[in-house]
Length: 177
Image 1 (cartoon, rainbow, N blue to C red):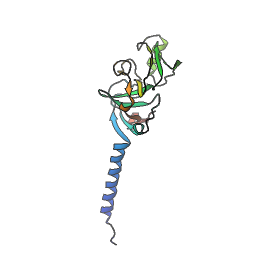
Image 2 (cartoon, helix red, strand yellow):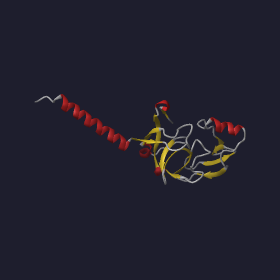
Image 3 (cartoon, rainbow, N blue to C red):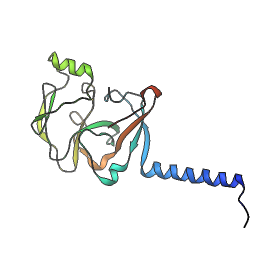
């Protein structure tokens, strides 16, 4: 039996690696870019992110997950309410199933505005999230187009994946969720 040449071995390894990357991108993850300021301080405009598609196969979403979804356009938002949850916002405080939520991901100036009793968002609710839907909001509530004001409840089938990491710009590299 003849030995493979080094060049042939290298070429086969390169082809195998390309196939693995292609399959991973098709079935496991995809990169995308954040547009807009609705997720500040968690994500910023121009951040390049890695999105895991695994949630689309196992159908397990959690409250607090940052997701990419497709409705009339592509959006990056945080899941606030799951099917069956009753939601209410009163004086910029979020209540889920009657319990006040500590939202550590909100920007400091939003927390300061709460202390000064400045309203950043309109009160709403109580509303109940229907079956097979989620309720999403941006972390920067004052500028976010989300389930409160235009997107409505989001079909779970429209969730493309969960944001797992920021990979660019270099100074903002981090894991999310």
